[in-house]
Image: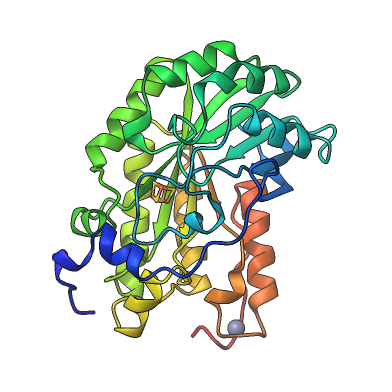
Length: 315
Ligand code: SF4
Ligand SMILES: [Zn+2]
């Protein structure tokens, strides 16, 4: 694929290609779900995810579509605890919780610090709480929140890719060194971290997409994360559709996700998960799609190899 001029990829370009946001209510999370996850201790646990409604992330990454369910303003003190209370009613008995806020939990314009204590008191019965953050927002505030929490705190961080040219063009405003130093800061404080890794960002062919996802998993584990989640890149946020129309981005194939997951699990450095959301986007073969989704889900839950799917779509 041809290279896109660097100057095209900036906040202005990315924002100008967006569609409208969805209507959201700052008193209610914009989503919640319960899924099974293999925990660090080797047990399969029900894991709750609350998708908190809050102010849009200050960064504007090329591939991100999380802005769709955000506000343009900082929501009132008390709204985030209210959203959590609302969602917890729907997930009794769950012991592991992800609080995902379409940005960085430690961004004070997104989650007011005045709410930390109330949030912590709502989460007393959990064993693990996982939040997400941009590496540049990982600092003493994490420790302040951790010290209020009874459950163990874990932090998910987007590494995205260790291909330096592509990482720069993703407009994430971070380097792989920023990622490594955030992980190291957390490790020194005995806070476990997780990495999000992209499969086939723009400007990579299928083979290179797999190559860089595998290198990124290696880097993340070397930096000290205890878990990686591989996310196949999709269109749908405006900027990615623009690149797709211009031949600079193609979504990866589900088979590549299987290859990367096999590789990551085979490293035996920690848990590696494939994001299994909406995998129909990544398959052109209706004959084997369900079998491949089942295989990926089994491998996520067991962290073991599962026999490959045989289908005529892959020779
Ligand atoms: S930092 Fe995360 S939430 Fe913010 S724009 Fe980038 S990918 Fe999206
Ligand atoms: Zn097939």
